[in-house]
Image (cartoon, rainbow, N blue to C red; front, side, top):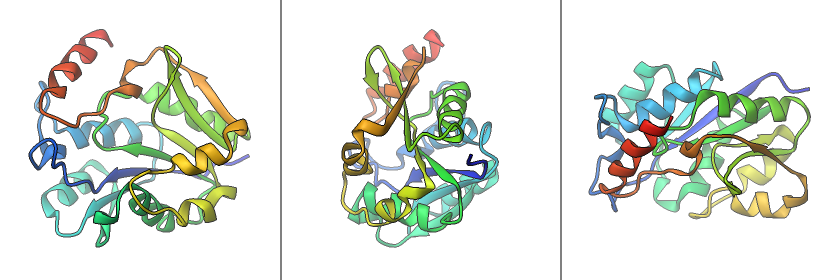
Length: 198
């Protein structure tokens, strides 16, 4: 069973719908969006690779201080799939990967632990669900390395999940944070509401 699981934190988006510098935006507690996402992942997985876009030194420095191993990606404009492939390439010896998004700050560590446990129990792909909806983070076994490293474009790993949908282990959790990403400034209000529910 896999024990060397690595977290991949995708933090290379431009944040254009937010108006830029989204991941450095502090939440109500003063901690930046991406720092929350990193802390949640690091609470479960001691090794986390954060993928940031080329030249984004403020985000790189912040995530490095949080404890991530940061990698700048020159082709981040090619989309989330390309960033994911790049991140997996920097942790290619892992037994599996838990892929998390840096703009999802409210995922509980216990949820991440459940996804990791499903991989350790032999799942090919593991994903949390809440109220019947699949969310993030998503875990992938090492046997999917080549498929993950072949990704490109903005679809993330959706194509890989669809290709193996009969083998996806769904983990039910009482965690609304798995569905909430922050794309626009008005999403911060939803985030505050979700924080109150947790």
